[in-house]
Length: 426
Ligand code: FCB
Image (cartoon, rainbow, N blue to C red; front, side, top):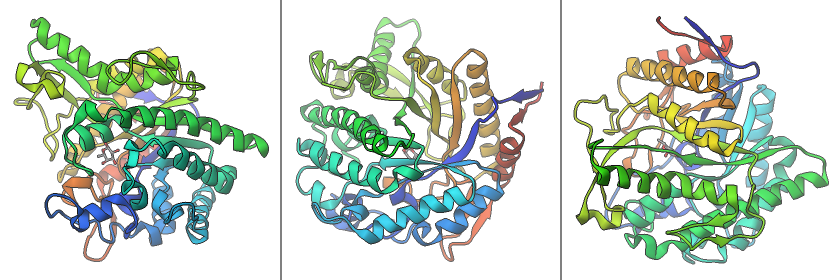
């Protein structure tokens, strides 16, 4: 059976600066890798050297029929010192954007993908209310410099993942486990999103540039460990609310709700998005647990019989359908801004692509307005705290010589992108 995707559907891949560029030595992650954290860890070093090889990487993506690309701008390169903007970094990202246009690939630019300039981290990062001022100034500079070249902007990547990893689990810098004591981190990110949305439109209007603005939201599907347990079902709702929906509801309604605030209205926030970016990877089964009060009274039960990826995350294609249906309540166009699998076995990646895209197609058939799909990722890259062993790339990267070798999954994805069709067995 042939599943047809809507005309003009965008097919691409996503990356982020720190994971592919190399030598981002002015941000907080680099500092952390270099011994700023509680234990030694793998360093990003030259990553995929994409900073120097972006041209050939985009040419390769284009040869694989991708017609769009999502990448991130590294704030610490643009503003290496407080209030000082780097002309060479601004020039660099213009070159990146021009290269994408030359290839006929629509750019989607992310303004912040987890990393912060070290000078901001030293002043408390997202905990410091002043970040709203710093972020606004940085965003304005980016839009003034690249507004003519960027049709799709992402303000912030996965703000809730950032909060959970950095302030609940303590696994990412600044390794805090204070959780809701640091809830202002979430509030600042919500406010920063709203500010960025208006700055982008305001600056673009001065020149009649057109762009759409959204954020990339991680959506993890939660299911109860025991479907007949009311407590398991309750904690599923709680996690879904806090982790998946609270941030989005705030933008939709203009109010930040419990447990971050008590229905606090944020000026100019309501409706401050033109689309939603969905990052989907996995499902989690959760069980009520009194002992896990800091995790919303819920415990993650490791998958036992289910298929998992190399990091132990369950592979659950139906989840992307479920996530799309949930997000459809906001009645905004949706881009799938990330979806992928880390595996050494490329056959699994091929199956993953087919199974997930079938579910995306199912959602489109049900009326969800999905505009495009960005596979994570173009290249094997630096997977944050996990380092280089997880392989997420459609393209294998040899760490010794930076050679790029497209996998069969890259060719399968290229065929889908070229034909705008997915062939599935009946
Ligand atoms: C997402 C991140 C992305 C990458 C993938 C595997 O949560 O946005 O940078 O690490 O996971």
